[in-house]
Length: 475
Ligand code: NAP
Ligand code: MG
Image 1: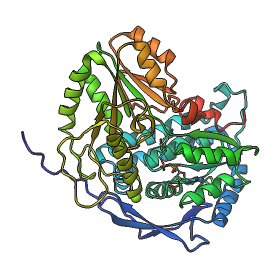
Image 2: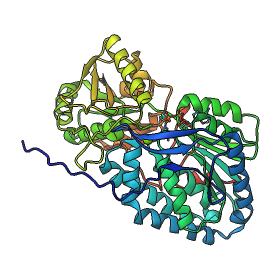
Image 3: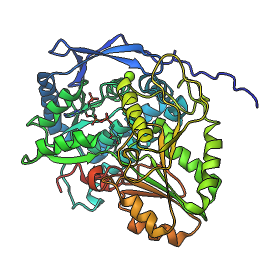
């Protein structure tokens, strides 16, 4: 075996300010409150910057700025709005290396993923929805569909800039203005995006960014001047938001948690399936709402698949996210690490068998080794609850009908994967799986043209594709 030489990406390309204010009405402003929060690099626990925590009064200022901008922005011809969105997309491409480094520093994900997955998708989303801005009359929502007004958007920390793109690109294309709150542990790329809005000469107030914690998110969601609420995050917070929005005239989309089944049949190309299993649950440290966190493998090939999977996992490299050879980066926060540990310990105490490859863990920062549980029963917490970490629960099945039963035996319904050589079986399974996305012989593939969203407790509404426009139009 050859050793890998270190291949660190340089952090010199990003210029992180010591402290950030709020982006309201096209300007950087100080918060009206006193509270600040330090955002850290989870791989080293180094403080990166201090950000303001927006108060209710700050949120009110931002919503007013968005309201003011809405009159002119919504009156622009779609072809004019498109020019701004295309410009944003191109600036993102031009600055993609810088943004990838910033994302990796603030979030802990490997630079290889932020560079090769997150950033290309972010740009693609803006390009895609820029293309829709002057074609809304042909989207199937009437000849002249109208925007909703001010969108209040709250996003999580697992794909900070990508979730921003999923929210902001369709909103702007449809003629809405936005106030967005990034997650408290990953605000930096959203603040860089505010700079990009200025660079693109986006009219002031069309995009406003307010940083803060849950209370800031709640203030935004509950603000009476907001016409549309878009939330991505946990099912628990999603439920609270659904309750608080009920009875108002606000339109709501919720993208929540998941506990996806990745189903491997005996006739699948098993080496390819193993790559798909690894990508399904160890991509982005498993901090993926649609992660394939439950492996359902047909009993006849279970031993063979598990042996190959363990061999493959032994080659994964955990460590410095800025190293281009790293496969598994840092867990985003101490709180998330504690949650992963708690659920993994529950797996052991409920009787499942735990396995991890030999894997040195850095001294500082938040880390969790890739982990596989076998002997998992459907009643175990690790088979039912979203772990949101690099932990795979393995179950077996004998017949396709049993695979469907087990896959659907969850309160969630965001995604699923099917691995088989038979096209007819893929269609048969896809018809029966209660999941918003069903991947066939692949996993965790995203494309801006394709709608994404959940069934049941995974939320409602779709993001992406033509369907994603509906959430931002008065239809
Ligand atoms: P979270 O705790 O629900 O937080 C999501 C966002 O909501 C954060 O910005 C959070 O602020 C904010 N927030 C917290 N309490 C709030 C409240 N009462 N009112 C309004 N906003 C509030 O979720 P998370 O732990 O950051 O993210 C992980 C979850 O997101 C997982 O369950 C995952 O499955 C889900 N997710 C779903 C999708 C999807 O498309 N379906 C995509 C990605 C992630 P703070 O950061 O300050 O807490
Ligand atoms: Mg951070």
